[in-house]
Length: 173
Image (cartoon, rainbow, N blue to C red; front, top):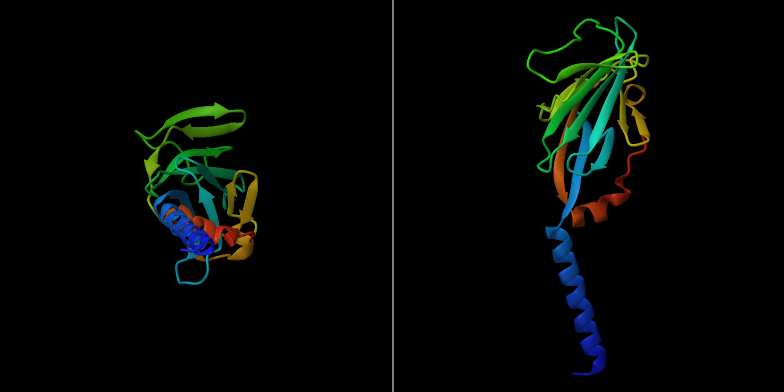
């Protein structure tokens, strides 16, 4: 075989091996926020197992901020980890047997919850309620994008190949 053919065979083999490896290797998790009635995702986040994201909104009665912090495990299961708010409002407060209540500055905080929610549906509130998805230093105001829309939060593991192929997916909405 001529040297040029060997180089081509070697290059093709490396591409195949790299593709198969990337298809089998974990690429982390993809969290999607998608309208229940269909349509493109409102937001998507790449997460590592155990990594957290937060939903912040303003209580409709108290007009006080509430933060709900969630995590996602390696299988894509979503858990609520913590709730933080200024004061008890309608529907807020400790759930017997779930987490522990602490004060953090002016806030009441339920920590150490690790309660499975699985995929869940959130009816996004009006502007002013400002349901906002927070991950690292990024904030996506879902109320500005899709007020009054029921949206499903779901997470799933993806391969490295999927992640590399879809990396430009970054939803800045």
